[in-house]
Length: 277
Length: 315
Image 1 (spheres, chains in turn yellow, blue):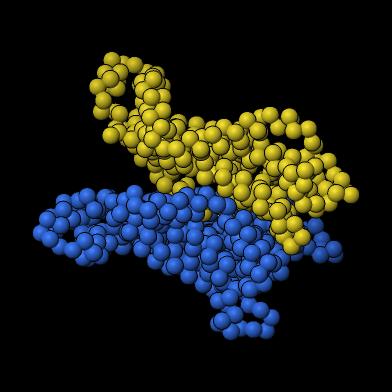
Image 2: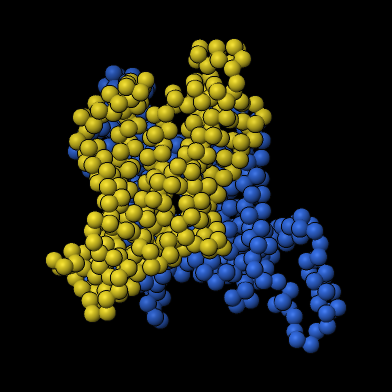
Protein backbone atom coordinates (compact mmCIF):
# COMPACT_ATOMS: atom_id res chain seq x y z
CA UNK A 1 0.00 0.00 0.00
CA UNK A 2 2.63 2.49 1.08
CA UNK A 3 4.90 1.67 -1.85
CA UNK A 4 1.95 2.24 -4.10
CA UNK A 5 1.37 5.73 -2.74
CA UNK A 6 4.97 6.73 -3.38
CA UNK A 7 4.92 5.31 -6.87
CA UNK A 8 1.75 7.24 -7.64
CA UNK A 9 3.18 10.46 -6.27
CA UNK A 10 6.33 10.03 -8.35
CA UNK A 11 4.28 9.50 -11.47
CA UNK A 12 2.11 12.52 -10.71
CA UNK A 13 5.13 14.75 -10.27
CA UNK A 14 6.73 13.51 -13.47
CA UNK A 15 3.62 14.45 -15.41
CA UNK A 16 3.39 17.88 -13.84
CA UNK A 17 6.45 20.11 -13.76
CA UNK A 18 4.66 22.88 -11.86
CA UNK A 19 3.99 20.45 -9.03
CA UNK A 20 7.73 19.94 -8.67
CA UNK A 21 8.17 23.71 -8.44
CA UNK A 22 5.56 23.86 -5.69
CA UNK A 23 7.11 21.04 -3.72
CA UNK A 24 10.62 22.49 -4.07
CA UNK A 25 9.28 25.84 -2.88
CA UNK A 26 7.74 24.31 0.23
CA UNK A 27 10.85 22.30 1.07
CA UNK A 28 13.01 25.40 0.57
CA UNK A 29 10.79 27.52 2.82
CA UNK A 30 10.81 24.81 5.49
CA UNK A 31 14.60 24.50 5.34
CA UNK A 32 15.05 28.27 5.49
CA UNK A 33 12.78 28.42 8.55
CA UNK A 34 14.61 25.61 10.31
CA UNK A 35 18.08 26.93 9.51
CA UNK A 36 17.18 30.60 10.01
CA UNK A 37 20.11 31.01 12.41
CA UNK A 38 22.54 30.58 9.52
CA UNK A 39 21.69 34.11 8.40
CA UNK A 40 23.66 35.88 11.13
CA UNK A 41 21.45 38.96 11.57
CA UNK A 42 19.17 39.58 14.55
CA UNK A 43 15.63 40.25 13.19
CA UNK A 44 14.85 42.41 16.23
CA UNK A 45 18.03 44.52 16.30
CA UNK A 46 17.00 48.18 16.07
CA UNK A 47 19.23 50.71 14.33
CA UNK A 48 18.26 54.38 14.48
CA UNK A 49 20.65 55.36 11.69
CA UNK A 50 19.41 52.84 9.15
CA UNK A 51 15.66 53.48 9.06
CA UNK A 52 13.66 52.73 5.88
CA UNK A 53 16.64 52.05 3.65
CA UNK A 54 15.85 50.44 0.32
CA UNK A 55 17.26 47.06 -0.69
CA UNK A 56 21.08 47.09 -0.85
CA UNK A 57 23.99 44.66 -0.57
CA UNK A 58 24.17 45.07 3.21
CA UNK A 59 20.38 44.63 3.56
CA UNK A 60 19.09 42.64 0.56
CA UNK A 61 15.43 43.37 1.44
CA UNK A 62 16.16 46.83 2.91
CA UNK A 63 15.32 47.90 6.45
CA UNK A 64 12.02 48.73 8.15
CA UNK A 65 10.91 51.81 10.09
CA UNK A 66 13.03 50.80 13.09
CA UNK A 67 16.10 50.05 11.03
CA UNK A 68 15.71 46.30 11.39
CA UNK A 69 17.06 44.08 8.64
CA UNK A 70 14.02 43.15 6.53
CA UNK A 71 15.42 39.92 5.10
CA UNK A 72 15.99 38.60 8.62
CA UNK A 73 12.46 39.62 9.57
CA UNK A 74 11.04 37.91 6.48
CA UNK A 75 12.91 34.71 7.35
CA UNK A 76 11.78 34.68 10.97
CA UNK A 77 8.32 35.84 9.97
CA UNK A 78 8.09 32.86 7.64
CA UNK A 79 9.17 30.62 10.47
CA UNK A 80 6.26 31.91 12.59
CA UNK A 81 3.72 31.66 9.75
CA UNK A 82 4.76 28.15 8.73
CA UNK A 83 4.81 27.01 12.36
CA UNK A 84 1.27 28.29 12.93
CA UNK A 85 0.12 26.73 9.67
CA UNK A 86 1.70 23.39 10.48
CA UNK A 87 0.59 23.19 14.12
CA UNK A 88 -2.99 24.21 13.44
CA UNK A 89 -3.11 21.72 10.58
CA UNK A 90 -2.01 18.96 12.99
CA UNK A 91 -4.69 19.98 15.48
CA UNK A 92 -7.51 20.29 12.96
CA UNK A 93 -6.54 17.10 11.12
CA UNK A 94 -6.38 15.13 14.36
CA UNK A 95 -9.78 16.43 15.44
CA UNK A 96 -11.30 15.94 12.01
CA UNK A 97 -9.99 12.40 11.62
CA UNK A 98 -11.13 11.46 15.12
CA UNK A 99 -14.66 12.83 14.71
CA UNK A 100 -15.00 11.71 11.10
CA UNK A 101 -13.81 8.13 11.53
CA UNK A 102 -15.76 7.50 14.74
CA UNK A 103 -18.86 9.08 13.27
CA UNK A 104 -18.62 7.09 10.06
CA UNK A 105 -17.71 3.79 11.71
CA UNK A 106 -20.16 3.83 14.62
CA UNK A 107 -23.06 5.35 12.69
CA UNK A 108 -26.53 5.70 14.19
CA UNK A 109 -27.35 8.36 16.75
CA UNK A 110 -23.77 9.42 17.60
CA UNK A 111 -23.16 9.95 13.89
CA UNK A 112 -26.30 12.03 13.49
CA UNK A 113 -25.46 14.21 16.48
CA UNK A 114 -21.83 14.74 15.46
CA UNK A 115 -22.74 15.58 11.89
CA UNK A 116 -25.42 18.08 12.89
CA UNK A 117 -22.78 19.69 15.10
CA UNK A 118 -20.35 19.79 12.18
CA UNK A 119 -23.02 21.37 9.95
CA UNK A 120 -23.74 24.00 12.56
CA UNK A 121 -20.07 24.80 13.15
CA UNK A 122 -19.44 24.98 9.41
CA UNK A 123 -22.02 27.66 8.93
CA UNK A 124 -20.54 29.92 11.58
CA UNK A 125 -19.05 33.16 10.26
CA UNK A 126 -15.52 31.86 10.87
CA UNK A 127 -13.40 34.93 10.44
CA UNK A 128 -15.69 37.09 12.56
CA UNK A 129 -15.61 34.52 15.38
CA UNK A 130 -11.84 34.34 15.03
CA UNK A 131 -11.22 38.02 15.55
CA UNK A 132 -13.73 38.07 18.39
CA UNK A 133 -12.13 35.09 20.17
CA UNK A 134 -8.65 36.39 19.55
CA UNK A 135 -9.47 39.74 21.08
CA UNK A 136 -10.66 38.09 24.26
CA UNK A 137 -7.88 35.57 24.65
CA UNK A 138 -4.35 36.82 24.93
CA UNK A 139 -3.07 37.07 21.35
CA UNK A 140 -0.02 34.92 20.70
CA UNK A 141 1.24 31.84 18.93
CA UNK A 142 -0.43 29.31 21.21
CA UNK A 143 -3.91 30.84 21.10
CA UNK A 144 -3.82 31.49 17.39
CA UNK A 145 -3.02 27.82 16.74
CA UNK A 146 -5.83 26.71 19.04
CA UNK A 147 -8.35 29.06 17.47
CA UNK A 148 -7.52 28.20 13.86
CA UNK A 149 -7.31 24.49 14.71
CA UNK A 150 -10.66 24.38 16.48
CA UNK A 151 -12.46 26.32 13.76
CA UNK A 152 -11.18 24.42 10.71
CA UNK A 153 -11.48 20.68 11.47
CA UNK A 154 -15.06 20.26 10.24
CA UNK A 155 -14.20 19.93 6.56
CA UNK A 156 -11.79 17.09 7.27
CA UNK A 157 -14.31 15.37 9.53
CA UNK A 158 -16.86 15.39 6.71
CA UNK A 159 -14.46 13.96 4.14
CA UNK A 160 -13.10 11.29 6.50
CA UNK A 161 -16.61 10.26 7.50
CA UNK A 162 -17.61 9.79 3.87
CA UNK A 163 -14.56 7.64 3.14
CA UNK A 164 -15.05 5.61 6.30
CA UNK A 165 -18.64 4.82 5.38
CA UNK A 166 -17.57 3.58 1.97
CA UNK A 167 -14.95 1.35 3.62
CA UNK A 168 -17.54 -0.10 6.01
CA UNK A 169 -18.79 -2.24 3.14
CA UNK A 170 -15.38 -3.77 2.41
CA UNK A 171 -14.89 -7.44 3.29
CA UNK A 172 -11.95 -6.95 5.61
CA UNK A 173 -13.79 -4.34 7.65
CA UNK A 174 -16.91 -6.49 7.84
CA UNK A 175 -14.72 -9.42 8.87
CA UNK A 176 -13.03 -7.35 11.59
CA UNK A 177 -16.42 -6.30 12.83
CA UNK A 178 -18.03 -9.72 13.06
CA UNK A 179 -14.92 -11.43 14.38
CA UNK A 180 -15.26 -9.23 17.44
CA UNK A 181 -12.28 -6.96 17.03
CA UNK A 182 -12.34 -3.82 19.15
CA UNK A 183 -13.77 -0.79 17.35
CA UNK A 184 -10.71 1.28 18.09
CA UNK A 185 -8.39 -1.39 16.68
CA UNK A 186 -10.49 -1.72 13.53
CA UNK A 187 -10.44 2.02 12.92
CA UNK A 188 -6.70 2.26 13.58
CA UNK A 189 -5.61 -0.80 11.59
CA UNK A 190 -8.14 -1.12 8.80
CA UNK A 191 -9.84 2.20 8.21
CA UNK A 192 -7.21 4.89 8.75
CA UNK A 193 -4.40 3.36 6.66
CA UNK A 194 -6.77 3.17 3.72
CA UNK A 195 -7.97 6.74 3.86
CA UNK A 196 -4.48 8.14 4.38
CA UNK A 197 -4.31 9.63 0.85
CA UNK A 198 -7.49 11.62 1.43
CA UNK A 199 -6.23 12.84 4.79
CA UNK A 200 -2.92 13.94 3.27
CA UNK A 201 -4.68 15.97 0.58
CA UNK A 202 -7.05 17.64 3.03
CA UNK A 203 -4.20 18.41 5.41
CA UNK A 204 -2.13 20.02 2.64
CA UNK A 205 -4.93 22.38 1.68
CA UNK A 206 -5.56 22.99 5.36
CA UNK A 207 -2.05 24.39 5.86
CA UNK A 208 -2.63 26.86 3.03
CA UNK A 209 -5.80 28.08 4.67
CA UNK A 210 -4.25 28.30 8.14
CA UNK A 211 -1.37 30.41 6.82
CA UNK A 212 -3.83 32.79 5.15
CA UNK A 213 -5.87 33.06 8.35
CA UNK A 214 -2.81 33.63 10.50
CA UNK A 215 -1.60 36.40 8.24
CA UNK A 216 -5.01 38.09 8.25
CA UNK A 217 -5.26 37.90 12.05
CA UNK A 218 -1.73 39.22 12.49
CA UNK A 219 -2.56 41.97 10.01
CA UNK A 220 -5.25 43.09 12.45
CA UNK A 221 -2.73 42.97 15.30
CA UNK A 222 -4.54 39.98 16.78
CA UNK A 223 -2.01 37.29 15.93
CA UNK A 224 1.69 37.00 16.65
CA UNK A 225 2.69 39.95 18.80
CA UNK A 226 5.58 42.36 18.13
CA UNK A 227 8.53 42.46 18.22
CA UNK A 228 8.32 38.87 16.94
CA UNK A 229 7.95 39.05 13.17
CA UNK A 230 5.17 37.41 11.20
CA UNK A 231 4.32 38.10 7.57
CA UNK A 232 0.86 39.40 8.46
CA UNK A 233 1.99 41.86 11.12
CA UNK A 234 4.84 43.04 8.89
CA UNK A 235 2.23 43.93 6.27
CA UNK A 236 0.08 45.92 8.66
CA UNK A 237 3.17 47.91 9.56
CA UNK A 238 4.09 48.28 5.89
CA UNK A 239 0.73 49.85 5.06
CA UNK A 240 1.74 52.87 7.16
CA UNK A 241 4.91 53.42 5.15
CA UNK A 242 3.50 52.62 1.72
CA UNK A 243 4.53 56.05 0.36
CA UNK A 244 8.16 56.09 1.51
CA UNK A 245 8.93 52.37 1.37
CA UNK A 246 6.63 50.26 -0.82
CA UNK A 247 9.13 47.35 -0.78
CA UNK A 248 8.13 46.77 2.86
CA UNK A 249 4.74 45.61 1.61
CA UNK A 250 6.00 43.72 -1.44
CA UNK A 251 8.26 41.12 0.18
CA UNK A 252 6.05 39.61 2.93
CA UNK A 253 2.99 39.67 0.69
CA UNK A 254 4.75 37.87 -2.15
CA UNK A 255 6.06 35.31 0.33
CA UNK A 256 2.56 34.58 1.65
CA UNK A 257 1.18 34.32 -1.87
CA UNK A 258 3.92 31.95 -3.05
CA UNK A 259 3.65 29.77 0.06
CA UNK A 260 -0.12 29.48 -0.03
CA UNK A 261 -0.21 28.87 -3.79
CA UNK A 262 2.41 26.12 -3.42
CA UNK A 263 0.40 24.30 -0.76
CA UNK A 264 -2.86 24.68 -2.68
CA UNK A 265 -1.30 23.46 -5.89
CA UNK A 266 0.46 20.56 -4.22
CA UNK A 267 -2.84 19.54 -2.62
CA UNK A 268 -4.58 19.63 -5.99
CA UNK A 269 -1.88 17.54 -7.66
CA UNK A 270 -1.93 14.99 -4.85
CA UNK A 271 -5.70 14.80 -5.14
CA UNK A 272 -5.44 13.97 -8.82
CA UNK A 273 -2.72 11.40 -8.12
CA UNK A 274 -4.78 9.59 -5.51
CA UNK A 275 -8.03 9.76 -7.44
CA UNK A 276 -9.16 6.30 -8.47
CA UNK A 277 -8.73 6.02 -12.22
CA UNK B 1 -39.84 15.77 4.81
CA UNK B 2 -37.05 14.24 6.84
CA UNK B 3 -34.65 16.56 5.07
CA UNK B 4 -36.65 19.62 6.01
CA UNK B 5 -36.74 18.60 9.67
CA UNK B 6 -33.01 17.94 9.61
CA UNK B 7 -32.47 21.34 8.11
CA UNK B 8 -34.56 23.10 10.72
CA UNK B 9 -32.77 21.29 13.55
CA UNK B 10 -29.49 22.39 12.04
CA UNK B 11 -30.61 26.01 11.80
CA UNK B 12 -31.72 26.10 15.38
CA UNK B 13 -28.52 24.39 16.51
CA UNK B 14 -26.40 26.93 14.64
CA UNK B 15 -28.24 29.86 16.17
CA UNK B 16 -28.07 28.21 19.58
CA UNK B 17 -24.30 27.72 19.40
CA UNK B 18 -23.73 31.29 18.26
CA UNK B 19 -26.03 32.73 20.90
CA UNK B 20 -24.38 30.72 23.69
CA UNK B 21 -20.97 31.84 22.43
CA UNK B 22 -22.14 35.44 22.43
CA UNK B 23 -23.67 35.18 25.86
CA UNK B 24 -20.60 33.48 27.31
CA UNK B 25 -18.57 36.31 25.89
CA UNK B 26 -20.43 38.97 27.84
CA UNK B 27 -20.23 36.90 31.00
CA UNK B 28 -16.52 36.28 30.57
CA UNK B 29 -15.92 39.94 29.93
CA UNK B 30 -14.00 41.68 32.68
CA UNK B 31 -15.80 44.30 34.76
CA UNK B 32 -19.15 44.41 36.56
CA UNK B 33 -21.93 45.63 34.25
CA UNK B 34 -23.78 47.22 37.17
CA UNK B 35 -20.93 49.69 37.64
CA UNK B 36 -22.03 51.66 34.57
CA UNK B 37 -25.18 52.65 36.45
CA UNK B 38 -23.61 53.27 39.86
CA UNK B 39 -23.05 56.77 41.19
CA UNK B 40 -20.83 57.57 44.19
CA UNK B 41 -23.66 58.54 46.57
CA UNK B 42 -25.66 55.34 46.10
CA UNK B 43 -25.97 53.07 49.10
CA UNK B 44 -24.81 49.47 49.07
CA UNK B 45 -28.42 48.36 49.45
CA UNK B 46 -29.53 50.42 46.47
CA UNK B 47 -26.80 48.91 44.31
CA UNK B 48 -27.92 45.45 45.37
CA UNK B 49 -31.49 46.33 44.38
CA UNK B 50 -30.23 47.62 41.06
CA UNK B 51 -28.37 44.37 40.52
CA UNK B 52 -31.61 42.47 41.11
CA UNK B 53 -33.71 44.69 38.88
CA UNK B 54 -31.17 44.22 36.07
CA UNK B 55 -31.55 40.49 36.52
CA UNK B 56 -27.90 39.96 37.42
CA UNK B 57 -28.66 37.91 40.53
CA UNK B 58 -30.70 35.34 38.62
CA UNK B 59 -29.09 32.02 37.65
CA UNK B 60 -27.08 32.13 34.42
CA UNK B 61 -29.47 30.08 32.30
CA UNK B 62 -32.33 32.39 33.23
CA UNK B 63 -30.26 35.44 32.32
CA UNK B 64 -29.49 33.76 29.00
CA UNK B 65 -33.16 33.29 28.15
CA UNK B 66 -34.02 36.85 29.16
CA UNK B 67 -31.23 38.11 26.90
CA UNK B 68 -32.42 35.89 24.07
CA UNK B 69 -35.96 37.18 24.50
CA UNK B 70 -34.80 40.77 24.17
CA UNK B 71 -32.95 39.91 20.97
CA UNK B 72 -36.09 38.39 19.49
CA UNK B 73 -37.72 41.78 20.03
CA UNK B 74 -34.92 43.49 18.14
CA UNK B 75 -33.37 44.87 21.31
CA UNK B 76 -29.63 44.30 21.06
CA UNK B 77 -28.84 46.76 23.85
CA UNK B 78 -26.70 49.87 23.65
CA UNK B 79 -23.14 50.19 22.50
CA UNK B 80 -20.58 50.80 25.25
CA UNK B 81 -18.62 53.20 23.03
CA UNK B 82 -21.29 55.83 22.47
CA UNK B 83 -24.36 54.42 24.25
CA UNK B 84 -26.36 54.36 21.01
CA UNK B 85 -28.60 51.39 20.20
CA UNK B 86 -26.67 48.56 18.55
CA UNK B 87 -29.43 47.91 16.02
CA UNK B 88 -29.41 51.52 14.80
CA UNK B 89 -25.65 51.46 14.31
CA UNK B 90 -25.80 48.20 12.38
CA UNK B 91 -28.58 49.48 10.14
CA UNK B 92 -26.60 52.67 9.44
CA UNK B 93 -23.62 50.66 8.25
CA UNK B 94 -25.58 48.07 6.32
CA UNK B 95 -26.08 49.95 3.00
CA UNK B 96 -22.34 50.54 2.49
CA UNK B 97 -21.54 46.86 2.93
CA UNK B 98 -24.46 45.67 0.82
CA UNK B 99 -23.49 47.97 -2.07
CA UNK B 100 -19.89 46.79 -2.00
CA UNK B 101 -20.53 43.08 -1.49
CA UNK B 102 -23.57 42.98 -3.74
CA UNK B 103 -21.70 44.55 -6.65
CA UNK B 104 -18.70 42.28 -6.28
CA UNK B 105 -20.87 39.18 -5.96
CA UNK B 106 -22.78 40.01 -9.14
CA UNK B 107 -19.61 40.92 -11.06
CA UNK B 108 -17.82 37.83 -9.77
CA UNK B 109 -20.76 35.71 -10.81
CA UNK B 110 -20.90 37.14 -14.33
CA UNK B 111 -17.17 36.63 -14.85
CA UNK B 112 -17.47 33.12 -13.48
CA UNK B 113 -20.31 32.18 -15.83
CA UNK B 114 -18.31 33.23 -18.87
CA UNK B 115 -14.94 31.82 -17.85
CA UNK B 116 -16.30 28.77 -16.02
CA UNK B 117 -18.47 27.65 -18.92
CA UNK B 118 -15.79 28.34 -21.49
CA UNK B 119 -12.98 26.58 -19.68
CA UNK B 120 -15.25 23.69 -18.73
CA UNK B 121 -16.15 23.22 -22.37
CA UNK B 122 -12.63 23.68 -23.75
CA UNK B 123 -10.77 21.70 -21.15
CA UNK B 124 -6.99 22.04 -21.16
CA UNK B 125 -7.17 24.76 -23.80
CA UNK B 126 -5.05 27.89 -23.45
CA UNK B 127 -7.80 29.97 -21.85
CA UNK B 128 -8.58 27.13 -19.44
CA UNK B 129 -4.97 27.09 -18.29
CA UNK B 130 -4.89 30.86 -17.85
CA UNK B 131 -8.20 30.75 -15.99
CA UNK B 132 -6.95 28.04 -13.69
CA UNK B 133 -3.86 30.10 -12.86
CA UNK B 134 -6.16 33.09 -12.23
CA UNK B 135 -8.16 30.95 -9.79
CA UNK B 136 -5.10 29.68 -7.93
CA UNK B 137 -3.90 33.22 -7.39
CA UNK B 138 -7.42 34.32 -6.48
CA UNK B 139 -7.87 31.78 -3.70
CA UNK B 140 -4.29 32.09 -2.44
CA UNK B 141 -3.69 35.83 -2.40
CA UNK B 142 -4.10 37.55 0.97
CA UNK B 143 -6.88 40.06 0.23
CA UNK B 144 -5.35 42.72 2.44
CA UNK B 145 -2.07 42.53 0.56
CA UNK B 146 -3.81 42.74 -2.80
CA UNK B 147 -5.63 45.80 -1.49
CA UNK B 148 -2.44 47.47 -0.28
CA UNK B 149 -0.75 46.84 -3.63
CA UNK B 150 -3.70 48.38 -5.51
CA UNK B 151 -3.61 51.42 -3.23
CA UNK B 152 0.10 51.80 -3.89
CA UNK B 153 -0.29 51.51 -7.65
CA UNK B 154 -3.42 53.58 -8.25
CA UNK B 155 -3.43 56.07 -5.39
CA UNK B 156 0.16 56.60 -4.28
CA UNK B 157 1.89 56.10 -7.60
CA UNK B 158 -0.56 57.05 -10.35
CA UNK B 159 -2.87 59.33 -8.31
CA UNK B 160 -5.95 58.26 -10.24
CA UNK B 161 -8.11 56.62 -7.56
CA UNK B 162 -8.99 57.69 -4.02
CA UNK B 163 -7.32 55.31 -1.54
CA UNK B 164 -9.85 55.18 1.29
CA UNK B 165 -13.44 55.86 2.27
CA UNK B 166 -16.69 55.87 0.36
CA UNK B 167 -17.17 59.53 -0.57
CA UNK B 168 -14.92 62.54 -1.01
CA UNK B 169 -15.62 65.41 1.42
CA UNK B 170 -18.88 67.07 0.53
CA UNK B 171 -19.27 65.06 -2.66
CA UNK B 172 -22.24 62.68 -2.66
CA UNK B 173 -22.41 62.08 -6.41
CA UNK B 174 -22.70 58.62 -7.90
CA UNK B 175 -19.54 59.06 -9.95
CA UNK B 176 -17.53 59.76 -6.83
CA UNK B 177 -18.94 56.65 -5.15
CA UNK B 178 -17.99 54.52 -8.15
CA UNK B 179 -14.42 55.88 -8.07
CA UNK B 180 -14.11 54.94 -4.40
CA UNK B 181 -15.58 51.54 -5.05
CA UNK B 182 -13.32 50.40 -7.89
CA UNK B 183 -10.43 49.07 -5.81
CA UNK B 184 -12.28 47.36 -2.93
CA UNK B 185 -14.68 45.94 -5.47
CA UNK B 186 -11.82 44.61 -7.61
CA UNK B 187 -10.32 42.82 -4.60
CA UNK B 188 -13.60 41.17 -3.63
CA UNK B 189 -14.63 40.36 -7.20
CA UNK B 190 -11.32 38.63 -7.81
CA UNK B 191 -11.77 36.48 -4.71
CA UNK B 192 -15.43 35.70 -5.47
CA UNK B 193 -14.89 34.98 -9.16
CA UNK B 194 -12.04 32.54 -8.55
CA UNK B 195 -14.19 30.58 -6.16
CA UNK B 196 -17.26 30.54 -8.39
CA UNK B 197 -15.25 29.61 -11.50
CA UNK B 198 -13.93 26.45 -9.84
CA UNK B 199 -17.46 25.25 -9.12
CA UNK B 200 -18.87 26.20 -12.51
CA UNK B 201 -15.97 24.68 -14.42
CA UNK B 202 -16.23 21.33 -12.71
CA UNK B 203 -20.01 21.14 -13.00
CA UNK B 204 -19.80 22.12 -16.68
CA UNK B 205 -17.35 19.26 -17.25
CA UNK B 206 -19.73 16.83 -15.54
CA UNK B 207 -22.67 18.07 -17.58
CA UNK B 208 -20.76 17.98 -20.89
CA UNK B 209 -20.10 14.27 -20.49
CA UNK B 210 -23.70 13.42 -19.69
CA UNK B 211 -25.97 11.49 -22.00
CA UNK B 212 -28.28 14.29 -23.07
CA UNK B 213 -25.38 16.36 -24.39
CA UNK B 214 -24.07 13.42 -26.40
CA UNK B 215 -27.49 12.72 -27.82
CA UNK B 216 -27.96 16.30 -28.91
CA UNK B 217 -24.50 16.44 -30.43
CA UNK B 218 -25.31 13.25 -32.30
CA UNK B 219 -28.49 14.83 -33.64
CA UNK B 220 -26.38 17.71 -34.95
CA UNK B 221 -27.34 20.45 -32.56
CA UNK B 222 -24.85 23.31 -32.39
CA UNK B 223 -22.41 23.35 -29.48
CA UNK B 224 -23.36 26.87 -28.44
CA UNK B 225 -27.03 25.93 -28.44
CA UNK B 226 -26.43 22.96 -26.15
CA UNK B 227 -24.15 24.99 -23.94
CA UNK B 228 -26.48 27.92 -23.32
CA UNK B 229 -29.83 26.21 -23.51
CA UNK B 230 -29.05 23.12 -21.43
CA UNK B 231 -25.60 22.89 -19.86
CA UNK B 232 -25.70 26.36 -18.36
CA UNK B 233 -28.99 25.67 -16.61
CA UNK B 234 -27.79 22.44 -15.02
CA UNK B 235 -24.30 23.66 -14.25
CA UNK B 236 -25.85 26.57 -12.43
CA UNK B 237 -27.58 24.40 -9.83
CA UNK B 238 -24.61 23.92 -7.49
CA UNK B 239 -24.08 27.67 -7.67
CA UNK B 240 -27.29 28.16 -5.72
CA UNK B 241 -25.68 26.56 -2.68
CA UNK B 242 -22.49 28.52 -3.16
CA UNK B 243 -24.34 31.82 -3.46
CA UNK B 244 -26.55 30.93 -0.50
CA UNK B 245 -23.45 30.36 1.58
CA UNK B 246 -22.10 33.74 0.60
CA UNK B 247 -25.25 35.61 1.64
CA UNK B 248 -23.74 36.14 5.08
CA UNK B 249 -20.70 37.74 3.47
CA UNK B 250 -23.06 40.52 2.37
CA UNK B 251 -22.70 41.54 5.98
CA UNK B 252 -19.50 40.16 7.41
CA UNK B 253 -17.47 38.89 4.47
CA UNK B 254 -15.76 42.13 3.74
CA UNK B 255 -14.15 42.58 7.16
CA UNK B 256 -10.61 42.58 5.80
CA UNK B 257 -11.27 44.58 2.65
CA UNK B 258 -13.34 47.20 4.46
CA UNK B 259 -10.53 47.63 6.96
CA UNK B 260 -7.86 48.12 4.28
CA UNK B 261 -9.91 50.67 2.34
CA UNK B 262 -11.55 52.27 5.41
CA UNK B 263 -14.92 51.46 3.84
CA UNK B 264 -17.59 52.50 6.37
CA UNK B 265 -19.50 49.21 6.44
CA UNK B 266 -20.40 46.57 8.99
CA UNK B 267 -17.07 44.77 8.69
CA UNK B 268 -15.25 47.87 9.78
CA UNK B 269 -17.75 48.37 12.59
CA UNK B 270 -17.05 44.81 13.74
CA UNK B 271 -13.31 45.41 13.89
CA UNK B 272 -13.78 48.68 15.79
CA UNK B 273 -16.14 46.92 18.20
CA UNK B 274 -13.63 44.14 18.83
CA UNK B 275 -10.74 46.55 19.36
CA UNK B 276 -12.81 48.62 21.82
CA UNK B 277 -14.18 45.55 23.62
CA UNK B 278 -17.69 46.80 22.91
CA UNK B 279 -19.53 43.58 23.87
CA UNK B 280 -23.12 44.49 22.95
CA UNK B 281 -22.00 45.63 19.51
CA UNK B 282 -19.87 42.52 18.93
CA UNK B 283 -22.76 40.30 19.96
CA UNK B 284 -25.19 42.17 17.78
CA UNK B 285 -23.05 41.81 14.66
CA UNK B 286 -22.26 38.16 15.36
CA UNK B 287 -25.93 37.30 15.90
CA UNK B 288 -27.01 39.20 12.80
CA UNK B 289 -24.42 37.36 10.71
CA UNK B 290 -25.43 34.00 12.14
CA UNK B 291 -29.05 34.74 11.30
CA UNK B 292 -28.07 35.52 7.72
CA UNK B 293 -25.98 32.35 7.49
CA UNK B 294 -28.99 30.31 8.49
CA UNK B 295 -31.30 32.26 6.19
CA UNK B 296 -28.87 31.87 3.29
CA UNK B 297 -28.62 28.11 3.73
CA UNK B 298 -32.38 27.73 3.99
CA UNK B 299 -32.98 29.93 0.96
CA UNK B 300 -30.46 27.91 -1.05
CA UNK B 301 -32.22 24.67 -0.12
CA UNK B 302 -35.61 26.01 -1.09
CA UNK B 303 -34.36 27.41 -4.40
CA UNK B 304 -32.57 24.16 -5.13
CA UNK B 305 -35.82 22.27 -4.71
CA UNK B 306 -37.63 24.78 -6.92
CA UNK B 307 -35.11 24.53 -9.75
CA UNK B 308 -34.22 20.86 -9.53
CA UNK B 309 -37.22 18.62 -10.18
CA UNK B 310 -35.26 15.54 -9.08
CA UNK B 311 -35.17 16.79 -5.51
CA UNK B 312 -38.78 17.93 -5.60
CA UNK B 313 -39.91 14.48 -6.63
CA UNK B 314 -37.65 12.69 -4.18
CA UNK B 315 -39.22 14.46 -1.22
